Length: 295
Image (cartoon, rainbow, N blue to C red; front, top):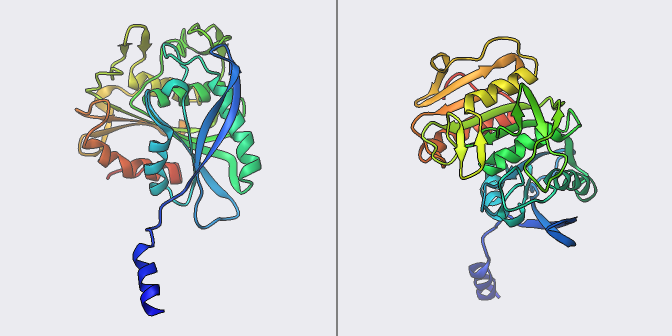
C-alpha cells in the first residue's frame, strides 16, 4: 500500500490556475449569422464576500488566454477577466474588426453578474495594451455608468484624433466605419494612469500617424484632456515639469483629477526592461488608486 501511495504522489500534477471560458453571441455586418465571442475568467481560490474585478485587454493580434495567464498570477485575489478581440483586435478605427465592442463589454458585465454573483461590479479596474488601451479609452467615453469603471491603465497607446478633437470627446454613430460623428461628454469617474515609452515606433509618443490611416494625439495631451474632463482647470504640465519617480520613469500627475501619465524614457512599444520597473507601480495603482513618490 505504501508503494502505491508513493507512486500516486509521483504522478500528481502541480497546481495550475484553471481559466473558465465563456461566450457572448453577437451579430453585426461581418457576422450576420452570429458569432460566439469568448472571454476567460480566473477565480480566486479564496472567495471573499465581494471579489474585486480586473479586466485585461490584449493588443492588436493578441490572445486573451495569454493575457490572463500573467495577470491572474499578479492579481490572484481578483476575478480577472480577459476578453478576446474579434480578428485579434478592438474596433477603434482602422482595424479589421468592425465588431460592436462596447456592447460586448456591457454583455460581459451582465454575464458576470449571473455567473459570478460575488464579483464586485460596483467599480471594475482595467489594464490594456496598445489597441487594448484604445479600447479602454473607447469605454471611458461611451459607458454611461459613472461608477462602473474605477481604475484604468491604458499602456503604450494614446487616444486617436477621432476620439478627441475640437476640445470634445467623440464616438461613432456606426461601428462599421471610422467616422467619429457624435459628440460625447464622458461621465466616468475612473482614476486614470497612462503609460507610454518615448521611443515607441508603433504609436508615436509625441503623436502622429500609426500605419496608413490612424492618427494619434500625444501621450501627454491624452492625459491632460482626461484631466480637464475630470475637472482640472489649470495649465498642462510641461514636459520638463515631470517628476522622476524611478530611474527613467517620469510622472505627470493631475492629482485632483486622479489622472497621471508615466513617461518611460527610451522605452519602445513593448517597454522592454523598463516594463519590469513599471509593474509595481501598476500593482499599487490597481489595488489602491495611488502611486508612491518613488520606486
